[in-house]
Image (cartoon, rainbow, N blue to C red; front, side, top):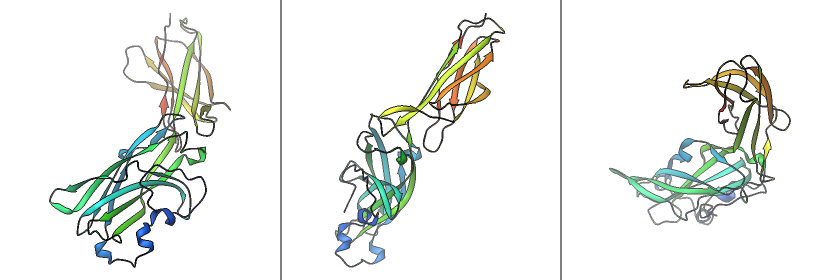
Amino acid sequence: MRVHVAAVAVTGALSLSALAVPASQAAQAPRPAEERPVIGKVVVNAGKPIVVGTTSRQKVAVSITASSPSGVADAYVFLWHGHIDEVDAVLGQDQARGACTVAPGDPATSTCTATITIDPRSALGRNSLAGTWQAAGGAVAATGDPGDESVNETAASVRLQRFSKLTVNASPEPVRKGRTLTVTGKLTRADWESKKYAGYAAQPVKLQFKKKGAKSYTTVKTVKTGSNGTLKTTVKASVDGYWRYSFAGTSTTPAVSAAGDYVDVR
């Protein structure tokens, strides 16, 4: 069964071999290895993590380079999560066929591109799907023989992350020099189960300050989020400038910084 014809989400565990092995191979004797394509480089989202919120679809670019003595007729990519023997989610490319370009001076090698659209409302029903996914790549030789197809189930890996948000508010504004400034905020991230944003608890977040006219922020202290993602700390007001919170991110959640809140110190 070929899975690259459409985006698919699988919620039950199944063997990856049922998805990755082309149907044509199940009924035919193995072809000589030299006539089957060699899967080369697979790139997903330009090598960057895929960040998905609660409602907006994310279109991800994928590409695969493959070689075969007779040339490459088609190549495709699909993403899967879980264990190779118990796959719990699969995302296939949007196109039935990739857009393939022959390498200059090398007619045996082609790079094929496509997209994978991820809709969190239908494809991501569990927060446990955040983290590392594998990218499988397949290619079909230009021989015209249905047996000349190869699949590499672990050609690359990519992180799928829950979109994060971070707020900040420094008060009072304005404030007299030397008085206490209270800085509050909240760190939230996409909850793919409720389709809302939920607080991210027990996470270290940096409180940073940028003096008026300066080009960069400096870290003042580190604060941990509360049970519902809230942040609160105090500092002494000294000069005019911008206060913000900055989160470094985790394997399942991207880094994010709040927009600076300007405080006038008098």
